[in-house]
Amino acid sequence: MAELVEEGAERAKVDIAKVLAELSGIAFGGMGDFLSISPCGEPVIDLTRCSPDVLNTLVVLEAEIIENGADGVPSTRRVIIKRLDKLRALAALAKHLGPVKGTVKCGRLVELGWLHDGKVPSS
Image (cartoon, rainbow, N blue to C red; front, side):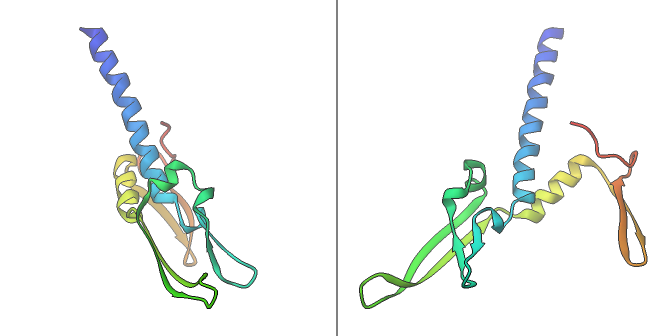
């Protein structure tokens, strides 16, 4: 019986670690994962740079040609990319990790830690 309990606890630990990793990817990912700015100042979307984990955080990906040039090559496009909700992922991470405390001096955050001991909990 003890073996079954230990095995279940070990599986739960792996599952929690995976969930936290997924939430972290959502919470801390950004447009920089697939967007850069060309020397002309135009946004350039390159999804080939993305890992499968980053691609899994995309909820909507729509591309539409609005206008073709004289040679038939698309000259104007509209691309819509939406990611999973960062705020919900951050809230879920914070709920799991525990309450946070901060110290503000002269209007600037100078210290941030977890309420229980001031240290980030180890996983």
